[in-house]
Amino acid sequence: MKRTTCFICSSALPAGRTRFCSISCSDYHDSIRRKRNSLRLSTLLAPKSCAGCGKAFKPKTERHASCSRACWDIVVASRRKEKRAALRKSGKIIKGLGTTEGSGNKERKNGHYKQIRINISKTLVDTAKFTKANTIERMELQSQVEEYLANGGKIIKYSSQPAVISDDNIPKWEITEVEEETAVEKYRGLNANNGN
Image (tube, rainbow, N blue to C red; front, side):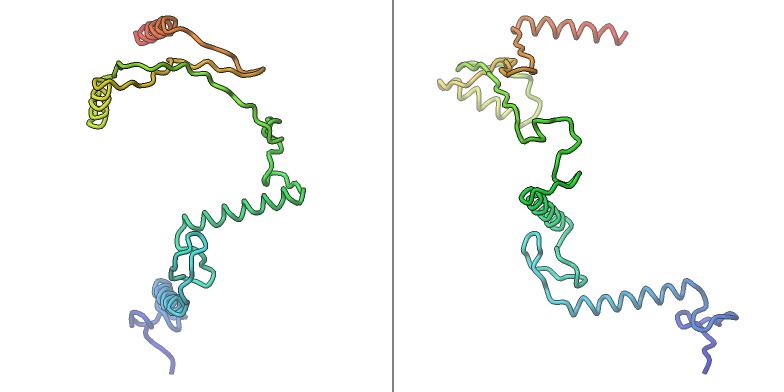
């Protein structure tokens, strides 16, 4: 017997149609069928342990390996790390994978890094200057430090600018506090004139 009404909405079928009156009814039927099949499949799948965190989770498909996107990112990162380690061990070099080929930094490419030593002068003091506290946490911290100093405690005061001690290409610099204040005032004056 030939069907004369739509399978979904029961309206009359137009000429040339055999089961659904429109594309929307056909799409609706397909979505219901897909949803029913996926629900049936997910109920059949046993819980798995997540490849990222190890916790048990209910997979949606057979290929589903992690409980969240964050765990999947961890899995992918560890796979890439293992692949790079294997390439280093085998001596094979693939451009762009686990190498710094093409970068201009020869020290980084060879695994040699220049060590930078920073000499920061420090002294023990029993007084401290504070900027104006505008939050509860900063006010509490300031009161605790003031109480500590009042009870005879000492704190370390670092110099305002460290001197960088290095080899060839890193400049050495250190200015006094007076020179720093002069430079800051000059900078403020220049900025004030730019605004006008």
